[in-house]
Image (tube, rainbow, N blue to C red; front, top):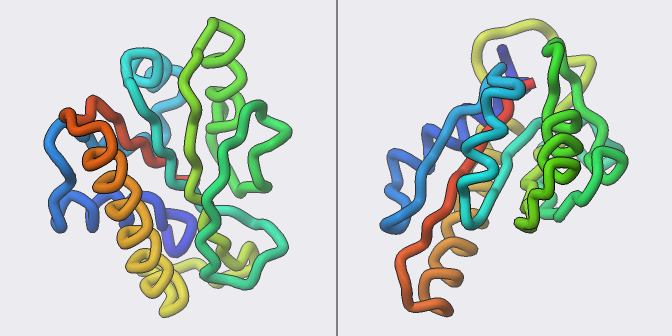
Length: 154
């Protein structure tokens, strides 16, 4: 899995750290269209995905893709990737803003089961940024968040 599974590692780390009340962490893995219903039911959506973009390896980028063309380049072996899922979500009337934390990985990395050192560092950065955002939202709204965190392992 290597750095391609970095989103899974971020979700696991978020669960270990503890997320604010009302936040649900889901490992989207290869879920495909089965993730559509949880996306539609969520009040807020934060996705975490590996990206093969032009940023330096290990860069964590926060963006809000509206259409699949706005989604950064990814490596995927799945029949239905996050880009397809986003398009279906919006075609079916999804109104929520989707926040994406894209983590740049090396598309030429050797096959391995564990994260690279850059990947491990990026997990820590992403967890800090996501927890900070969730806490700010909770403090701003002064209500429990009804959010769903999704992860897509490419």
